Image (cartoon, rainbow, N blue to C red; front, side):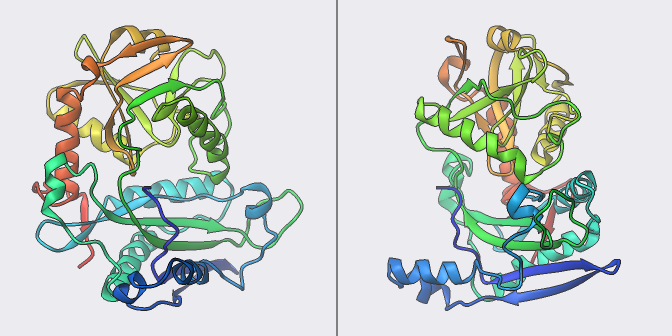
Length: 361
């Protein structure tokens, strides 16, 4: 599995009150990484559970009752030279800030977000909780490489009536993470469920958005597919995004299309990075509406993008019983090129000429 609840011991927490943020770093119960690895399964579960308890945060809150929370996902990646770096935290900081404003919370300062993410990773690394670079990852373009997953999120003050958070916490935790998608599966299927509607919260990285996504992804998995794809709510004919990732279609004409941003599409950081890399290659990139029929009939290559997904190829797409297989069921040339460049920069195998990687140590 990509994600585990084995949170690293050092946690960042900030609380908003009286018009200001108060920050702290908490060091939760832990042993050395080697000692923890030698624990029995029961002992390890107990230790992990002890790191996931915050006695001074209310059980009944706008977050626990109504899903009123925003979160981010970004990675600190081990570099080929032995260092550690975070991928584009400034962009996550901006989206987190905008998401909090979108849910009418006091927004968290962007510079504080970047500093908190980098420092939390650094403090955990000093205790030995970090992933280390392995040359074997290069064999499959880092598709099964490990990294440190950084999860910043908000948690509201206590509340039971339907309301908004005026004094939220911001928490940053880190966990180890590996490949996101299940090996051997690479097909996608459209979902009849609706992820987001106009004038809703689809553009916000809100916790509540992911309930439908989790259900739809599980339904796709039970039907034998790697991923589900959502269509628009109004006409049910335009592609929007996957369960937790943006989507790209490389058409037979040479155009690379990804659904245009709006209030139903999440502005992905990996999405923006891929658009930049593709345009540097001279690819005509369009951010526009793309109908499901056009996607099925005109696509040469298809892939999804995201912090966890990177640039993951989609072998086929099925809609209402109609199945389109892309590039003969293999990874396409453009997909591979973009994936290899993106991963190469992220893991330090390629020179970062864009300033995307922020060194931790």
